[in-house]
Length: 242
Image 1 (spheres, rainbow, N blue to C red):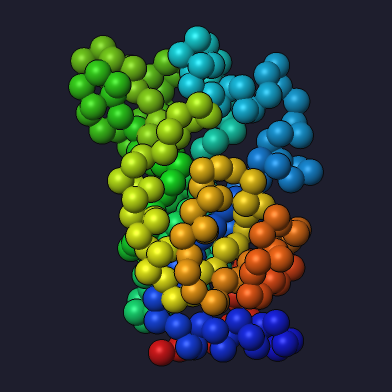
Image 2: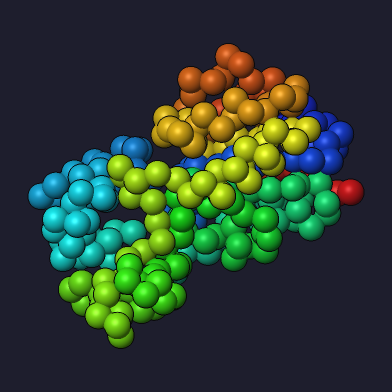
């Protein structure tokens, strides 16, 4: 165990209100592509850039193209939780972690056993009718063709935050409260480039701010510990105990 991992281990051992803030890098190890990496969606070729397709404007103007892309590139139902997801669930079960705040929409934290998961950008596992608000699970989206339609005739949309849309205010409030109360904040698998989500870390008041990412972030200079590497590999070296 190298010095950085030892320091991380000690911080975790000394903490009782840990919050984890994660991004796409947490899910890439489960086979879900990152948007901004070399192999990510932004570097594949489509008639429109993914940012355009996944925008509120495009969704309303070209819904058939939106749903074709969405079914093809946003649903990874065979993905399974990786080491990072499992370690976080264990930390919560031990009473050391109070919340996971995630920018991911894949539901893998819950699949690993985490209970308090604040999904800033929603989840592909949930869908609802825009007219009557009837709930539909992900299989309804997978099995549909064209524009998915509710029994009432309304359009069914995924419960995810598209570009140009605001975050859910309750989720945002809960994330701010959890981070404000935390005695340790671990940030993993995110470049901290997406706002307003990235701005949430400003609410942390403690002295155990840890950044774990494969590449540098704009907040590295303000962190108490920076570890360059894969979140799963880093977590796999920890000894998690009460």
